[in-house]
Structures are given as C-alpha cells and as structure tokens.
Image 1: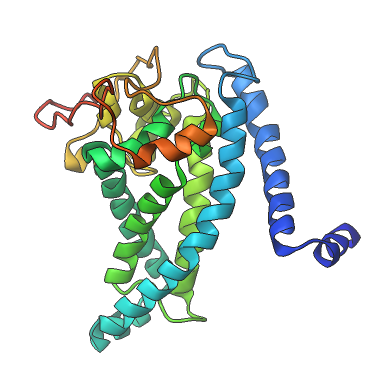
Image 2 (image 1 turned 180 degrees about the vertical axis):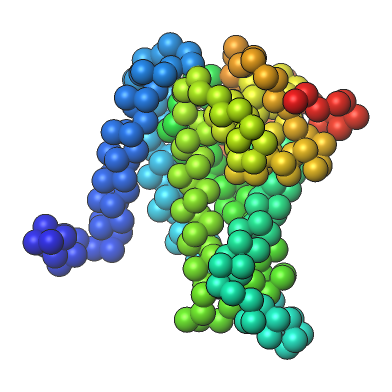
Length: 293
C-alpha cells in the first residue's frame, strides 16, 4: 500500500499507466512463459524474432487507443443513446444486469468479427492489419503486434452494436461497464489464443476460441481468411469461415504481404498504397468451401 501511495503521489498519470502495464506484462510472462516451455507447440526461443517489436506494441497499443478512443466512444454512445426510441431504453433498463452484460458481450463479438473480417477483405484495411500477420513465430505476446489504427477500428466495430441496441447506458448505469469488460476479456483471451501451446480442448472448442483455432488464422496461405472470431468460434460457423482440423496444426506462420521488420516503417507504410511489387492482400475468403470440423 505504501508503494502504491508513493507512486500515485510522485508519478504522472501517464507514468503510472506505464508502471501498471509493466506489472501486467510481468504477470503475463510469469503465467505464459513457463507454459510455453512445458507445453510448446513449436520449439522457439523466448527471445524469438520480433520480440522487441512486440514489446513496443504492447505499450503503444495499451496507451494510445485508450487516449484516442475515449472521446469518440463517449460521443458516439451519447449520440446513439439520444437517437434511440424511449421504449428501447425502458426495455434495456428492465433487463437484469447479467442479461445486459451477456447481450452486450454477444453484440460486441459480432461487431468485432465483422471488423476483423473486413480487415482481411478490404485492401485499404488489410494494409494495416497485415502488421499483425507478419509474425513468423507465434507466442502470447504476438497478441500485442497490431497497428494502432487496426486495433482501434476493430474495437469500434465491436462497440457500435452495443450502442445501436441501446446496451450502453447513461453514466452510473451497469451498461457503462461493458466497454471495460469487453476490452479486459478480449485482451486476456487474445494473449491465450496466441500462446505457443499444443493444448486441445475437445468439445469445448465448439464454444470458445482456443490456440488451435486461432493459430490456423495465422498460418501462411489462404487459411488466413478463416477463424475471425475473437472468443466465439461458432460465429465463424454461422458465417461460413470456420476451419478447424481435428489433429493438425499449422507448420508455418506469416503473410505474403511485404511487411518491414522496422517498427517505425510498420507504423507509416500502411498509409501508402502498395507499389507494383507488393504482394497485396491475402486471398479472398472461399465461403463456398465446406468447413472442416
């Protein structure tokens, strides 16, 4: 407690945020690094290729989006809330808190699914999202590798359905917890599904996303255009983008789209169209193909 009071007294809010992120990173490392050594899917070093880049993204993407998104989310929520008919507000207010949170979580997952899918299907969005797929070795920290605008776009897609359905309430109401809960759950689960572990979960894999499910999304080739859901794989079944072999794992990760290994270049390059030598976006989703169960 004394240490906490000292930090709150002597550090600026920004510095305090950095310290908190460093503590959370240490906790994540304590949890995942031993698991990835004991149950490794692919043998790789802790200090793998791109580790420093992912560490930089960890701090950047946990500091910048919160600052940039705060006002757009607030004003978007207020605008939609005032636009919705009064009986929608009454209907939502009458729902139990647990049902509000569940409905909001489901709405956010559907929005995030489509935001993620559009990031693959629309060339201008793929230029930003390709940064995340540039990792050729996968572990828990790859979850942090994302262009800040790519991360913000997907989050906004998740939030907007909450607002459209009136599931985000005015200040001091239960619905205001939704963005916080969604970010917390999504972030933790994101670290888990990227983890370099060989675990399979049987029938549970139908219900929630697992490392096996998400690793196929990172494989090099056309299967990159599968398994978009962050936590609910049955959304991919519903929309025809599910791929999950029973006993196979990806052998190679990455993207055919050229992405620099330099952090500064990764942040700037997506703002410019690819030249004639660029590999372009990944192959389009082949929704006509049968999903593998």
